[in-house]
Every structure is written in structure tokens, then in C-alpha cells.
Amino acid sequence: MTSDALVDALVRNTFQVVGVLTRIGAERDLSLTQLRVLGILRDRRPRMTELAAFLGLDKSTLSGLIDRAERRGLVARGKNPQDRRVVDVFLTPAGLELAEQVYGEVRHALASATDRLNPQDSDRLVQLLHAVLCSPD
Amino acid sequence: MTSDALVDALVRNTFQVVGVLTRIGAERDLSLTQLRVLGILRDRRPRMTELAAFLGLDKSTLSGLIDRAERRGLVARGKNPQDRRVVDVFLTPAGLELAEQVYGEVRHALASATDRLNPQDSDRLVQLLHAVLCSPD
DNA sequence: ATCCGTTGGTTTGCAATACAAAGCATGGCG
DNA sequence: CGCCATGCTTTGTATTGCAAACCAACGGAT
Image (cartoon, rainbow over all chains, first blue to last red; front, side, top):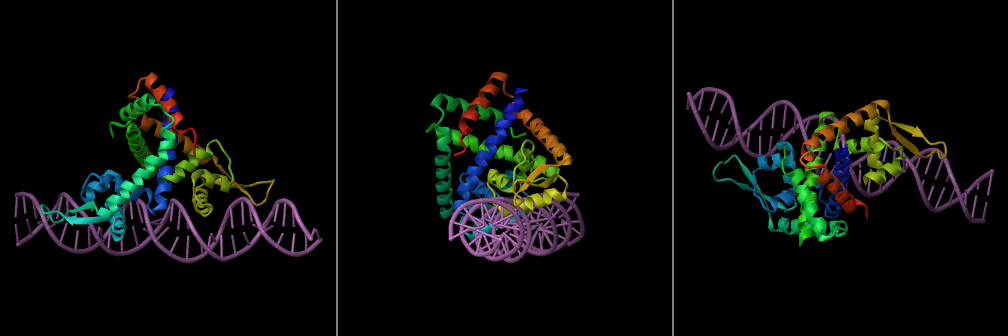
């Protein structure tokens, strides 16, 4: 079955990227999850529950996660005028700067891998990856 | 820059696969790391240090990890006749069975995604992924 | 043969991550 | 108003991870 080879490649690729992300995050004392939070908040301002669902985490997990990030001045909690129960989360300027920095480094670190492809192959790979991951099930 | 799109796709893909692995692991009380241990031990019998290096973890982290897996009867520690200091790790029959089971499920879960590709695209994607990840840097 | 530095693992202490269950406040009904 | 649902936090517990200290075994040098 050819799809086995594909699954293997996907999983292997996953752990390699996870390794890169973890290493880069560790240099700034950011866990994989924190890194992901920063990435998500770059272009969103979700409420706690939304963010938890996005990350596939429990609400209670997120409370602690945001607590720590807030204590470091990376994110902030905002009140939602429509519904006083909900808590919106967003990046502080410092958080945004760190996010951009880190993701710049990620691009740089992965460049050594992605540069092995010529532009056509690169485009093709992007297309294929999109095809594979388009539906979140 | 086209490589930005590629990096984005790789990272997004990574988190999607991590999500699948985490979910399937959770059904059997296996963390992502435990899952990976099982995957690695399927066709290897490394010593503790080798396994730690493979996973990018500290030796001390691995001790606890293997402790718990051993307590569940999934792996075992073996003495190395050449050097009495080293501890070899390998899957028990139960561990092997669980590993096969879980990775079967992973294949199944990802099949809904991979099946979207025709065989040619699938092969092409495998090729491209291999090209990207061939050197671990 | 002994000394001693190196290597291989474990132990201990600490922080972060994650879940579940319980709790608290707000919202939105009937 | 009474009551349940929703949104988030708190509390308790297990796992994961690192660093530092530790012990045991190896191996070369004297």
C-alpha cells in the first residue's frame, strides 16, 4: 500500500518539524504549546474557549497556560463588552515582537531544508500539503 | 518568498498530524512521547542514551519515561553483556502488539486525508517530503 | 594493581503541561 | 424570580522535562 509510505513520511516529517520548533522555543523558554499560542494569536483575538478548542486542549489547561504567558507580559486578557463572562486573549506588543522573531527563526531554520527544493517542487509540495490537510475532519 | 508558504504549510501540517497522534494516543493513555517511543522500538533495541538522543530528550527524562512504560508492561530493560553499565530497551510482546495496533489506527486516521490524493500525487508527495527531511541537520 | 577521569543511568528537586471535577459568576430562558 | 446553561478559574493529581547530584562500571595511566 503506497499510503503507508505516505503516512510514514508525514509522521517522520512531523517529528522533525516538532524537533525544530521545540529547539527554537527552548532558546526563548517557550514550550511547543506556548509557541503555538503565539502563532495563533498573531492574527486572531479569540476567547479562551475558542483558543482551547483550536489547540485541542481543556479549558482548565488554557487558564494556566495563559496565566504564565500573561505573567511574562506576552499576552493579555481582555473583557468582552457583549458578554461579561468571556475573556478575550491577545498578544501584547512584546508578545507580537517575540512571535515575529521566533517565527522568523523557524523560517530560517527550516530554510536549510526547504531550500533543497527548486521553486517548482516547492510550489508542488505546498499544493499537495494543502490537499492533504485541507479538511480538519 | 515562496518558501514562507512552504514553511507555513509544513508547520500547519505538523500540528495537524500531532493532533491526530495525540488523540489516538490519548485513547490508550499514551502521550505523544510514549507513542514515539513505541514507534522507534518497533525496529530497534537501543540503549537508554541512544534513545534519549533519538528523541532529543535528556537521559533523566528517559528514565522516568521508561519506568512508567515498564510498569505498564510495554517495554523492558535488558542488560548489555559487553558493558554492564548500559541498559538496552526493547518492546515486550504486549508493547509490540499495542504499537502495531496504534500505528494501524494512525494509518487509518490519516487515510481519510491521504486518500484525497491519487497514487501519482501520493508518490510525488512522499518523494518531496523525503527530499525535505533527508538531512536532520 | 590501583588511581582517576570518563561514560551510562538513576535519583531528586523543581517547573510546566494536561486533565477532571468542583466552584463561581454571568447570561438567558420560562 | 428560579433555574439551567455557559465561560472561565481553581484545585488536585499524573506526566513530562531539565539540571544537578549521585553511583557504578569502564579504561587508560602510572
